[in-house]
Length: 514
Image (cartoon, rainbow, N blue to C red; front, side, top):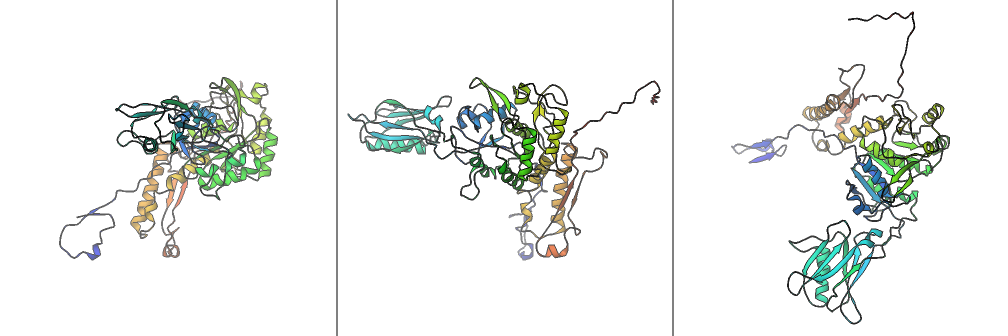
């Protein structure tokens, strides 16, 4: 017989024979995904207050609707994310509660037509108004065919629908909601409900109507949502998605920054906000100070908003800078900063289009205020990039973007369920060795393969230490079921200032070696 590890009770064996125990291989720590990008905003389609993945620029219009000229538009920020090569996007659609799903009434052939079935959009939103439904002759004799279509998507065809009167309509509703066994699954566009008709269906086409987005009354408070209701709403819906970057679309209310920062710190997310369009470094810095946010898990951008060419609506639009920072941050490796990383695809910023470049004193003021902005030129040339590398922490050891992202990456990699097996097992030297070995192996990869960690002045020195022994596990703790491991890691530092010392002159003597 075969036994999995730890299930064979050798103390109770009494019958002669061969017992085979399958021993699990050593634990392996998989690096956490760092490009998870969370966005909360309004849309023309999709579930409400429920996270969903949008990973394709071609599918995005069918998941959230078209790019729309309005505040807090998910489709707009997704378009910018795809432009910056960011594809792992988790979206939460919010509404003001007035959103309505589009409908169409399928009629019979009676002199005064009666509704046989009502089709309602699978989701609320104006995109549902583009759905059409057609009833025609089916492939089989004496049958009908229902075709549900949305432009750009493969039509949903429910063929060979049979029955007379109310039976037919019941069969149509069942096919739409439950699918046709062995033929196709349930509709992903509409939900059907049976009507009162007992007559033959009319051969006709219908266009659904009445769908609304519920976007007009959405506020910054709506974006934040609530974690005191079930299910949770707004940004709280993203807490189990594993995202590491958060963008509450077009959020500017500084009195709520502390709430966002607390959420991000709790779940290991790098979030942020910005000043309203046109707000200066001084104004936004003062708002940050008043808000009382001083943490590595939050980023604040100046109100120098970005101009972006919206090719869908053929106009240049003013977009919040978090649209750029969030997508760029999520696409970078965790050891990197957005500082001096070239941003393509934008027309300019409010300041740049007014020919008002930032001065050195303004850059120094932004650093002192713990805020950032996008500008051209950059340290490396005439291109747009972010300028300070600062999160909102006032501590020199933790105020770099890379501190936040590396800490989140390592915490997510070592946490989660990787070492869940430890709980419930006796604390033995073997268990300690397995945990320590797995963590050490993971960190060795981050040092020697990925190059995410290291000590530049001692490049051969191992830049981490894992302690799991009696020094941090005294007998008093072991006795009450506690096992602790201390992981110390040296991060690479982001270069912010590059100093060149030049000594020249006719009296300078230069000695070189061959």
